[in-house]
Amino acid sequence: MKLIDAFYKIFHPMHDMGDKYSNLVGFKVGNKKLYELAFTHSSLNQVDVNGHTLNNERLEFLGDAVLELAMTQFVYKRYPNAKEGMLTSIRSSLVSRQTLNSLSESLRLENYINAKNISVNNVNIYGNSFEALLGAIFLDKGYAVAYDFVERVFNNTAKVDKILRKDQNYKSQLMEWCQQNRKSLRYELVAQNRLENNKMKFQSRVFVDEKQMGMGVGFNKRQSEQAAARFALKTINVMNKNKNNGRRRPNE
Image 1 (cartoon, helix red, strand yellow):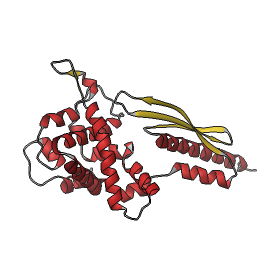
Image 2 (image 1 turned 180 degrees about the horizontal axis):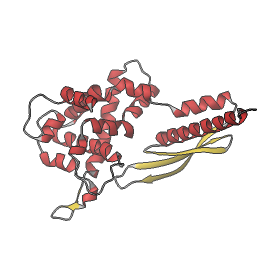
Image 3 (image 1 turned 180 degrees about the vertical axis):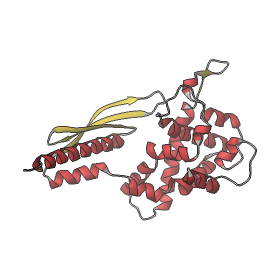
Image 4 (image 1 turned 120 degrees about the vertical axis):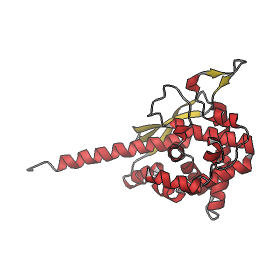
C-alpha cells in the first residue's frame, strides 16, 4: 500500500479538480458520461431507452487499439537504438494483461468500476477497464492527450525497466534447453476464437521430441506460445527434480 500511496502523490495533481474522473486522469475531462461508461461492466446488463447495450466493451475495443499505437510510439522514443524485433518484444511485455492489471491496481480503478457479482479473482476486469478508460480519453480529448496519459502512467508507476527485467522469454529459454539436450521443438496452434468483446483468444501447445509438454492461451499467437513454453519449462523442472530425488534416496 505504501508504494501505491507514493504513486498517488506523484501521479495525481495536488489540487482537487472538482470531479473524480478529472482527479483520476490528471486533467479536466469534458464528457463525463464517456468515463462513466468506461467503468460500466457488462454484468450490470444496462440498456438505454432504445434498448442498446450500455457497457464498456466498445470503449475497451477502442482503447486496446489506442494503447497499441501509444505503446508503439512510447517504446520507439524510449529505445532509439533497438531493432524492430526487440521493440516488438518490449511492447508486448508492457501491454501484457499482467502489466495492465497491475497498473489498474496502482490507479485504484476498483474504486471506479461498476459491476455486479464479479469475483475478486477476476483481475482481468481491471486491465479491461484501463483500456476502456483510454478509449474514453481518446474520444473526449484526442490521441495526443491519450498518449500523454499513457506516457505519464508508464513512466510514473509501471517502472518500465523493472517490468522488462522481470519479463521472461519462455520460448527462448525452452529453445535453449532443447538445443542443449538435442531435443526437437515445435509449436502447434490448436484453436482461435473471437470473444464477445471482439478480441481473439488463441490456444497453442508445444511438443518436445514430439511429446506434448505444455499448452497455453493468450490474446495473440505469440502470447499463447509463450504460455505453453512456460508450462513446458515447469514440467521439465518437475521431471528433473523427480529424477534427482530418485538418484538421492536416503541411506543409499
